[in-house]
Structures are given as structure tokens and as C-alpha cells.
Length: 178
Length: 166
Image (tube, rainbow over all chains, first blue to last red; front, side, top):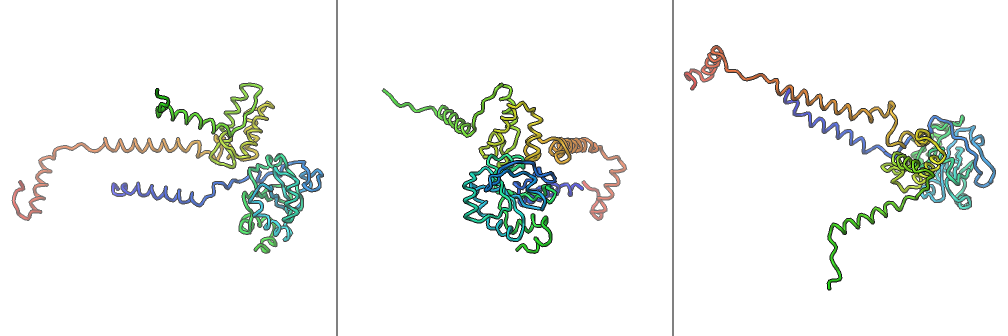
């Protein structure tokens, strides 16, 4: 028994090592949204191109992605081609142009292509605040009932789509994803 | 006449630190408060709210755009007469319990709140057991005559007839 006691520090060391090793592969920036499982917030904002008011009612009905983007956001440019790709496959994407200059945003969409079924201009970041957005890009999965199911922070690419988001868009969407 | 005197090291250090703090404070905008008590609450709350973007800073420390927005919002809500609890609830509803450096007590934060206490108690228990074990070792007593005889017999057996041990 006293012999075994000598191995206690070694055991403690290995336990601590395991704990810290686990920590190496955790992503501390992965924050679940406080909105998950809740209704997508009510809002009334201007459409980016139309300048007509858009409300929550205009968005919901089908499962969709809500993509928070801005022209000042470099990563948004990186994920943009993939969003176009998704839109082509029939995924409904709502674009929330977050704290941006609308003229610049329209120019960006004209130049690079417009993946958004609906575009909303959140110039002051009020809807962003209600959604708990803390940067761009962020992408939310909102189901057909208008309930937020998931949030991805950062660039949306094929890997993220496959592993985290596609499940909410039916078997067809998963199958089509490269 | 000596014009230049070399500044004492400590004074230079003090001056350097003084200007450093000025630079550090300059990144934060200033707000006017209608009441000094609001300003106190502003400082207390902005020191308790965590910046969602730069995770190891409070919104008072951080210069991230989101921290700036949250400070603006905090000021606005304080001026509108919101209570501390209302403001914290507002923030938590949007950014999650994560946004508080002093999270409320629930199932997930139980370990945070009671973990240190539990570890302290375990440590004290361990220490008590260890100390008790040390004082309870049996005291040494001289062997009785019978035990001595038995031991002598054993030793002589081992020495294979080597006679009485010295």
C-alpha cells in the first residue's frame, strides 16, 4: 500500500496531462448562440436593394441560412463563392448586411454575385445585437418555424457545411454537398 | 554650470508608467452621465461584462467594435433607468451566460462556484487524515523477556549454530 502511494503523483500528472491535452483540441471561440432553440428576433429593417421595409414575417417559412456579412469583413469575401454555390443548389440564404454602407454592399453583390434570396441592411447593427452577433461572418440556421437551430462563427466552407449545417436541410442537401 | 542632470532611474520609470496609462486609457471613449451613481454602476457593469470577441477582456478593457457597441448600449440603458439585473438579463439573453464574468448559479456553473470550496475541503480532509495517521503510529516498547528469547532462538537458527548473538 505505501508503495502504491508513491505512484499517486504520477497518476495525478497523467490525469492533468489528459485534461490539458483535451484542451489543445478545444476551440475556445466556439460559442453556442444564446438564441439556439429560440424564435428568430422580430425586426423591421430596410431591404438592401429595394429600400422597402422587411420584417421577420418575410423571412420565415422554409429552413434557411441567415448569413451576417459586411464589405469591411475580409473573411466574408473568402466564404462568398461557397455561398453562391449553396444558393445554386437551392439553399435559401438570407443576407444580413451588418453595420455597413449599403451602396458599397450593393456594389459588392453586383461585382461578385448575389447568393441571397433576401437581403436586409442592418446599418446600425440593431438586429445584429438582438441576434447576439459579435463579428462577421456568422451564419445561423433558422428552421421552417422560424426557430434558430445553430450558429456558425467564421468562414462557412464545404467542410463546415458538411459537418455542421447540412443536416438541417434534408438528405438531398447533404448528398449534393461536395 | 551643469545643465543636464541625469534623472534618477525611479523617476524615469514612474514617468514612463504615467504616460503608458494615458495611452491605455485613450482607446476608450468617454460618456457623460446625468448622475454620478450611474457612472459608478457603468464602471462596475462594464468591468463585469465580458467581451464576446476578445474573450479574456471585459468590455471596459477591450477596443473591439462589439465591446464599443456594448459600452454604448450600457450607457444608454443606464440613462434610461434600467436596473443592473435588467441590463445583465438583456445581455445574457443575447450573448449567453458567457458574457458575465460572474455567471449566475445554475447546473452548468455549479462547478465554477462550488468547485474551489470542494477542492479545499478535500485537501483539508486529506491533510487531517495524513496528520492523524502520523500521530497514531504505535509507540515503541521494549520487547518482553519471552519475545527476547524467541528472537534469540530465531537468530541462532539463522546463524546455524553460531552460538549466542553478541
